[in-house]
Length: 108
Image (cartoon, rainbow, N blue to C red; front, side):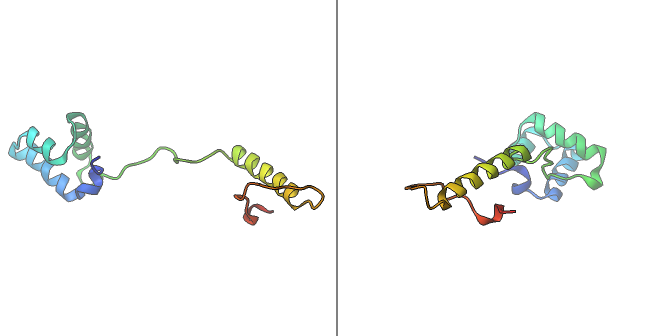
């Protein structure tokens, strides 16, 4: 899988290609092969570049955090882990195996 565009090229390199496309008539096929992107992505980036060349960026802007669980789910997990810890620490109950993932960082 190819690296993302912002990891393969600098902003200045992409700007130079856009300028050559807009003002020097460089062929679109050459740019698409060089950048290894599709027409749709090229024109999205070109539109952003034309709108504001000085603030043009290739950085990906996430709309939301990834790989996160909701606060409610996290609280529920912590609650269950604390319950398991109580069972484990209870000397009257014989426990032969348990979840080792609980840590004291959750004690509050």
